[in-house]
Length: 89
Image 1: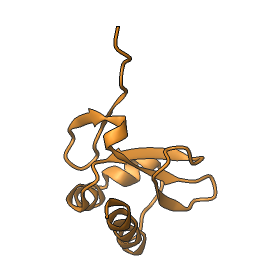
Image 2: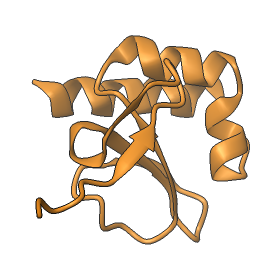
Image 3: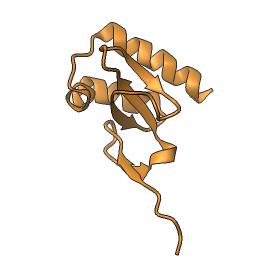
Image 4: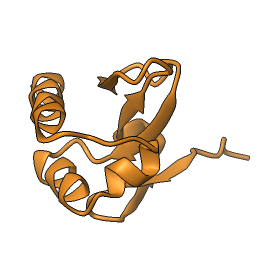
């Protein structure tokens, strides 16, 4: 019997994909929001596709704020975009 692969929903495009194919955004207990490439950082996490469009859409729709239970400023969102683009390359 094959091992079950966990599924997560992208906050931007709302598609279900394998957890390993997604990028985790984490809000640490001290309130710092960052891209978690390892998937092991402490804090509340949310998943998006590794595409800038999905992160932008999740930010516009406030889906990221709702999932992380914290406010996200436009400066933090642009920092996340930079971190995501560096991670993809």
